[in-house]
Image (tube, rainbow, N blue to C red; front, side):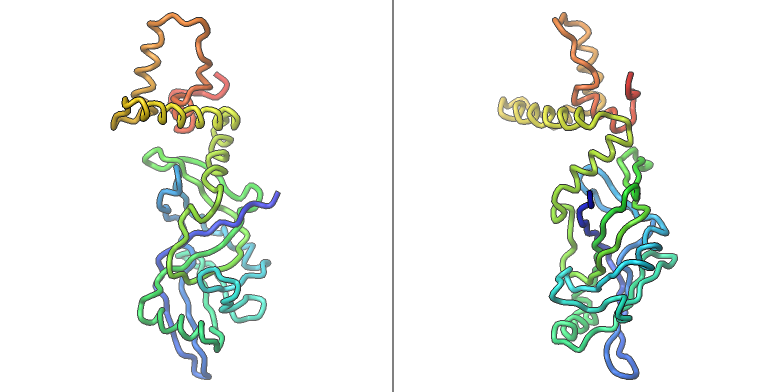
Length: 253
């Protein structure tokens, strides 16, 4: 199944220049290597060097304004868009067309009104992997991508513009940790229901009810109470949290 189109952005120092033979050219970076993104809904992300090397040699890529296909700025197969990887990230250079929107964009970029770039992409099969940051936070590394477009943008596209990406990311992380995807979805729904019940009962607190400390507290308390059927530890929200964070839980235990 083809993966969904995702978009990411980066602050970019654009260069806008008038060419000797006429016309305007812009250049900047659409992606930066080995830099953590903002929180993308329970994980952060980085782009590995080489992630674009195959796609820029093979794909038909456009430069757009605000990812709008009606505002084409250049195309690599037409020779008006040039893409390359350098020691910073994905570099692009565009010979702007002589259109009103392109002229307006060049003026806005020269003034600094437009100062961010974005790229649209799909992750190829096995093109990403999962690990954790130094702070033990889920980290997705993009290693091979199908590049769709590069785009100067007025406003960056955050995660909520990519429908379902956070859910697919959680599923990918669960698989990487060897945790049942069904259990993850089941326990996540249970955790949300539990938080809503606590809120409605007026017993919520500022303390995270799913934190590892609370999990240990609940586990300790549960051993002092008789139960007809002890819950399977792999099907609790606390165990889910610990499993995904790779603490105190070995899949299949």
